[in-house]
Length: 435
Image (cartoon, rainbow, N blue to C red; front, side, top):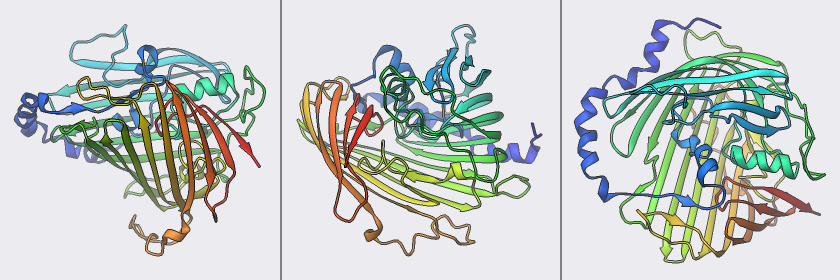
């Protein structure tokens, strides 16, 4: 592993050393906790065992790489059998150290026939400042925002639909988070990672069919091993989904992966930026509007697996899986849900019983070639006519949901039926496409 410089490490933590000045501000907010309600959408696989693994890690992750699970099944690892966990704020049961959180896992990939591990240790200083470090050697994916790890494992094992693409990652990192208030958090990390391509090792499923035989793509057409040093920066606004009115709540996450900084001798020099805005509007007691907006930009020369990809699960539901790729991306999902969904306990919005929904997915991504390091460069010629639109509807019966999606005129794609286990943007079980 490459040694990191002192200056790089200091840069990674530079936003966190004002933590002591935030102590009293955070303490003040603690006293007003009762004024806020924490929004979450409870249904599907979100109870007991599964709830521990579905902790919205894409919004609570201080580190650059997404978290993974100690028990999983996919076409690369086959069965991965491990012990431990990788959930923030949950200490590994055998290492309960007062004031320190230790988490991670160690396990064996029956497909790749190797041992993998991930370990992290973190500590809060005061109420608002967190520091931590991690070391890892594991299979990973950047597709967690499309469908959850648990949902994907169940789908791959039963129906043969594996909707994640994988790579192997080995390295270490340091991370920190500073909470400026109950609604604003700043994160920074230093990361050194060796990425290698992962290959199919299994096509087993309880039922025939599915896409589990789909070849897992290489990380780049020109390299199967990539060494990258990077700085991760993140701004989180209302990451815990707090609301005072119980009618509206929003979350905004803006993240940057910087691998094109002075002093970095990387195989690929690029910067990757991404923003996600989630909005939930309660229109009346039985009507909920959900809106997700995403945007992304890559400057410089990035490896193929870092490109943006839209289509299929969790994005454009009537389009082919990752049918659209590029270094610039815009996407929006809007869904109107009707039914018995408002059950207030500490402000929780819960979907229960029979409900109906209508939705629209819109997105665009393309390769824009220029030499600018401005992340907004390349969007100036964008026009709404470039967007691909899908529309559809669904019916839910408790945690089970049936959907149909079709492309609008002028958009590519097929009428597609989905069977889902959770009524969010993120959790989808399998699909059947019709010509």
